[in-house]
Amino acid sequence: PKVSALYVFPLTNTRFLISYGQGIRAPSLRELSQNADLNLTPEKSASMEAGLRQPLMDGRVRFEATGFILRFKDLIDFGDDPMNPLVNMGRAKIKGAEASLKMDLTIKLHGSIGYTRLLTENNDTGEELPSRPHYRWTAEVRYHPIARLMINLNSEFVGESFNPFDSLIDLDGQPLPGKMASYKIVNAAAAYTVVKGDPVLGTLDFTVKLSNIFDEEYSVLLDFRNAGYTFLAGIRATH
Image (tube, rainbow, N blue to C red; front, side, top):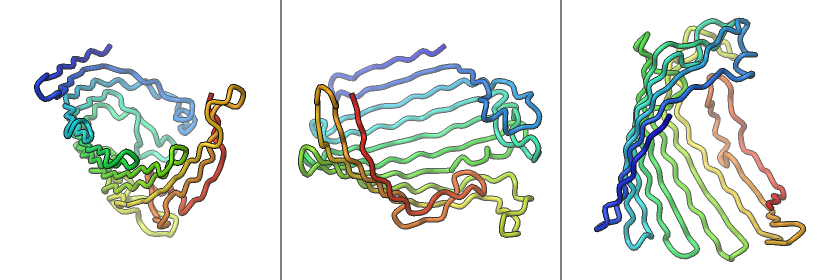
């Protein structure tokens, strides 16, 4: 079940939102296949969040801020058994806040910046939860020089996260660090609409993506290094 409420303050058009919900998630086939022991049970959660949305400068600038807390029972996460890397952790808690500022700089140019702060705890051990970055910054700029062309530049700076496997050995023979390192990546993309609203073809966009432009070495999950600089081009069809 989930319940939420929204209140709009008419004088400033400020929107206040609060919600509470409960959830249940069964282990996926992929998670089950990673373990020799298949006795993973569904994880249960309860979440609460409260926030506000405030338009400024006739809606050209929009500020949003939200605080949240999630409590888990039987959270499915990494343990310390190599044969059964995933376990039902017991009770855990995630709390934090996020904020964003979105701006319409001109009719053709739009930008946004966001920040997320996380605090996590395994209530059974008192340690942090693994692979949850302490903070994350994001920034994006979108430019439409002509109606059919969109150019996007975005970046992300991700802080350190806890590594519970510092007793294990890395591929280079060195012990794994107690913290997963912070990293920053920059991406770019462009899309050009070749055909729009055709009764047979629908809409066809030619797309180009440049990922990790500066070839940053980083890992989102422990010792699984992400790809370096990547170039992708293709056609996207929508109906």
